[in-house]
Image 1 (tube, rainbow over the protein chains, first blue to last red):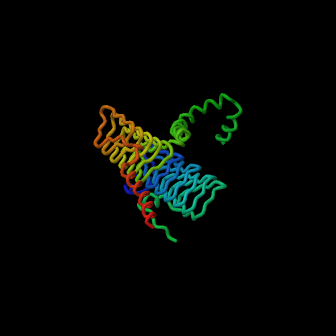
Image 2 (cartoon, rainbow over the protein chains, first blue to last red):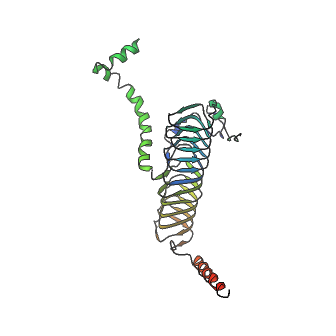
Length: 137
Length: 172
């Protein structure tokens, strides 16, 4: 497991050192235009236009993301327009998702709005994921 | 069988319930302790943004509220108040009402109130109205007290522009 390719976008096995890694918050009034990358946790209350890569990603209710997101655990309670690549996906009742959700496990709360396909992928798909695939029509 | 009987007995006699409980408590405690800071912080931080040391942003940040940066930003930052932590690095311009720098900025700071602490490393100009530099700070660039002052060049362009529209009208 430790012999994972370095360039893999997702580390499916959490490292011991990840446990203490810090959490980032993007506040309600914040808009980020660009790419975000973290080995820790990211909580989005604000708005992101761009790609996000995190170990654990939470889009809070009221948060909005326009772009692809890659994470080991993705928790969506806000708006998303883009693709999700995550091993474990949780979608809250307050979510409004438009786009494909690539997952190994997924849970969707009653009330969530999802417009898009939800393709299943095995865990090793995410382990070997180095670049995001182009969207097919 | 044993599990069923134990769970049935647990709620009824109290001494039985307390004796198995010490075993699961230490196992659950670290999980709760690890999760505790996460829900505690968003309450505080729903308005304050925290860019942790593990986060790298390539692009612009714009906020109507405060930002605390401990990580790495390649791009401009614009907020009401910006705090740049000791190990933070920014490549770009930091705009704000108040900017406190303890980390490294490679670019420019434009703010009403600027504080460069003893660990600050500033490469580039500082445009301010109120500036404090602590002993130990590294500053390489111009410090100009021009924040909020109308740019002389912009002023010069505006005046002839109004005059230019007025003069052609007269001969016509």
